[in-house]
Image (cartoon, rainbow, N blue to C red; front, top):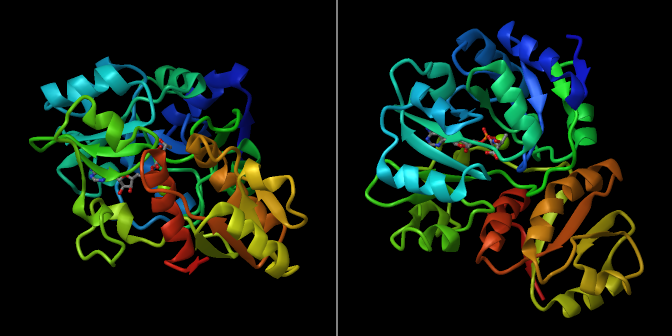
Length: 335
Ligand code: TXA
Ligand code: MG
């Protein structure tokens, strides 16, 4: 398939592709998305094909204004409205009971639909020109690391999609916080940059789905997507727990030539070899913004193994560690 590369100034072309039932890659503030008309099941199936995505993993419907939500749900309840008022547009997805007209291809046959109102200007203009909710997963081959730069998405999906809109590096760098708002209080199904602490400042009863509290294999995952292999680069990923200075000192001595390490700015300067920066340790949003880009670089540089310092699982650290535990398949070291 020939992919049409689209600059932000030519977004009518992208909208036309959507209306013709094609797939289009677009930037968002979290990760790049691979979109199609949510109300065109044939177009939605093309997404699954382009990504090799399992059919039982539902997609998120993206909207460009809250008015658009009425086409997706009759249950935009007061809790959902409050969260939308505080956090939308932004890196959050609300799980709501769906309207019967929302195709099963989008929701994988579930009675609920995920709705996201992105903040990214290009994403919003694209959806608004397409004039329909855009069903979109992250723009990557299923099981691999989500793309957060145009270069990454271009390398991986050229020739597999109808169009691709060029954008900047993604501002947040990890996928949206997925929140079930069909229950008495909000429940986080997938942690993200809108943190549990932020949700609790609005709804003190907001909680994490139990499957996020244990590292054990989960029999009943919070959302269908959570049970699949995820976020895996080719390189082996090893999480390293312990004092950051101690970690740097240990690997200064033991790092092999085919291995690399991700380090925070504080330890980065003095480290001598095979290193990629995570930004400042004092703001984990820095790490979130860079982490997927770094995992892809590790593969491009053909390292066989990457060591990553574990961080505290609070705030956005919870979301970063949620992804990294999957990337590492549970492999960890304690220094
Ligand atoms: O930031 C994001 O959310 C990005 C950008 C493109 O918007 N999208 C994204 O989509 O990460 P995807 O498909 O890679 O992840 C969507 C997650 C999956 O874990 C899926 O199972 C879950 O959301 N999900 C979607 N609809 C759901 C539903 N109705 N009930 C429960 N989980 C749902
Ligand atoms: Mg994904």
